[in-house]
Amino acid sequence: MARRKATQSIQEFPLIRQLQRRYERRSPLIRKGIGDDAAVVSIPSGDWAVLTTDLLAEGIHFDLHTASPASVGYRAAMANLSDIAAMGATPRFLLISIAIPAEIRAADIHALYRGLMSACDQYDVRLIGGDTSASRRGLFLSITLIGTTPLGHALFRKGARVGDGIYVTGTLGDSLAGLQLLTSRRASRREAALTLVDRKFLIDRHRHPTARVREGLWLNQAELATAAIDLSDGLSGDLRHVCEASRVGADIELSRLPVSPACRAYAGRENLDPSALALAGGEDYELLFTVAARDEQKLERQARARRFPVTRIGTIRSRRFGLQSVDSDGTRAPLPITSYRHFT
Ligand code: ADP
Ligand code: MG
Image 1: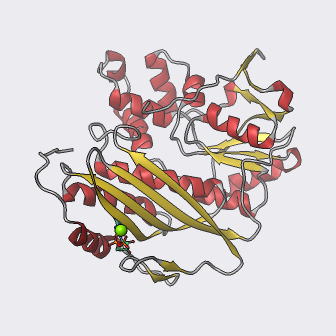
Image 2: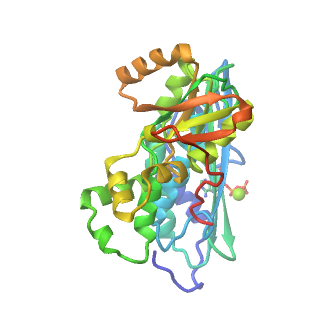
Image 3: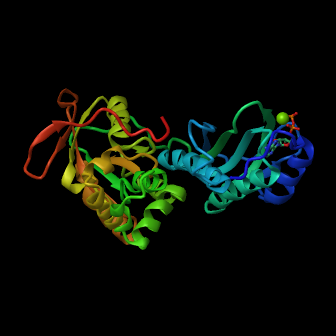
């Protein structure tokens, strides 16, 4: 993005008024949105409120040299939407706080909000407020998302039992491959060998991931999942959270990991193991969930009928086995401990 010297500073109140004018939308659930000391909303009676918040710091979580303000806003909203999806809840209201360094222009803030709103609009989520500050160094943004779910119905990390099937939605590793394509210094000849369509697909999966909100709602309502989590840090890291919360172990069958044709092509050209990309890659925002053995057929039938892509990738085992990978000839190894951290 264009950076300018720290001379011109954005004025807080005119900015807030502009943000309100451009990005606030009506809803019968909102009694008061932007413009008072706090927002007031209705939570449908008999519902639980489901709340999540995320803080993103420039240089730690995103880099404005490789990402546009619009894609930063979009991905920040999507990360929160994905957390609500993983609980099986309906996302509804969003608050965003920003600390703006002097060199950032109002146009960049609007681009960020446009990205944010394009993620929110996909799920009918309404902006209801936020906070605005100056920053001495770097852009900070914090998003809080409020969702709802019928009382007593939510998907937790805890709940997986020995013998449950382990499933994921979609394909894994695309976002990491896209990020590597964006940040790789050497514009290698191998990369040039990747078709433009594959390259675009992977970069788009990084810049414009989609949270699996509909799938989460289905899993929750149909009572088919015993535990769930969204894949933000990478399969091997996030599966570990489910196993710790549920006090179980897991076998992951490497040959079953769903890898897109584009990611497979990328791995081939970079001499990488596609299953390593699928295990380590973060920010795919797919869901990982577990299903009791007796429900697996029902789950797969319903997924087909709804055209939700789900793949069974392994089985929950007793805690004493830990987390293991099993390759196509049955060789076992401990699942690698570290998941890929994009910006550290
Ligand atoms: P306060 O001093 O009570 O924090 P503000 O002047 O910061 O009030 O906020 C006034 C209204 O504008 C509130 O409704 C607040 O939620 C909203 N608001 C402030 N900053 C933002 C922002 N960056 N994005 C959206 N809404 C905002
Ligand atoms: Mg304020």
